[in-house]
Every structure is written in structure tokens, then in C-alpha cells.
Image (tube, rainbow, N blue to C red):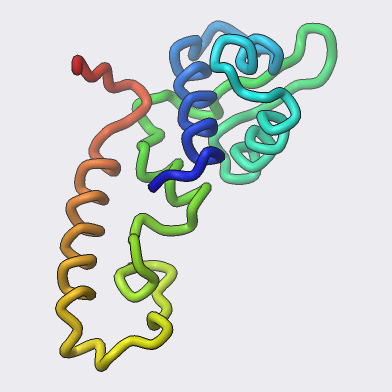
Length: 137
């Protein structure tokens, strides 16, 4: 399940993506329109700046904007930046692998095989879809 922080980060970046190229967007606007607590959004946008997704400028005319076009930022990028991995179990992570606690031999673990498949399919979808995508549901 995605954490609240990850969902807020996605919503904030989508908001910035919708206004890409229109100048800095103030934090209060993002918080109000996306229903994100302002203090939490400040922390999230700081993390997104460190991850290279946003830029910021202080002052009356300041705010936040995407550091690159929305088409160059995928949902997979954001989830990895906020969660560290797309895997549901640590032994299925590609970049942050760790053996599971109390696991049987990994070579015999059928759960790991399923979770590797889930992780790969999730990555295929999230890495293919960018903030520029408009999905009709």
C-alpha cells in the first residue's frame, strides 16, 4: 500500500505538472487545492527538491515548480524516492534488496517468486506512466 507521504508527493507533483512552465506555485495553493497539510507539504517538497524533482524560490513571488518537464518524471521515480522500493517484500527489491526475516531458503521460496513478478509488473506500469499522462478512468 502506498504511504500517505507518497500519495501526497504524487498529488503535489501532479499539481505542479499541470502548471508546468507557468512560474512558481506557492505552497499554500498546492496545500489548499490538493488538501495536503501545509507543514507536511513543506517536508514533502523539501524531499522532492533533494530528489531533483522540484526547484524553489523564496519570497513574495516565490514558490515551487518542476525541475524538468512532467513527461520526464514517472510515477515509479516518485514512489522510489518516497518509499525506496517498488517491492512489497524486501527480498523482491531490485535496488534495495534485503533478505526477509524468518524466511526459508530463497531458492525454494514460492512467495519470493510471486513477489518478484508483482514487482516487475508494477515497475513496468509505473515507469511507463509520467506526470504528463492523462488517464481516463
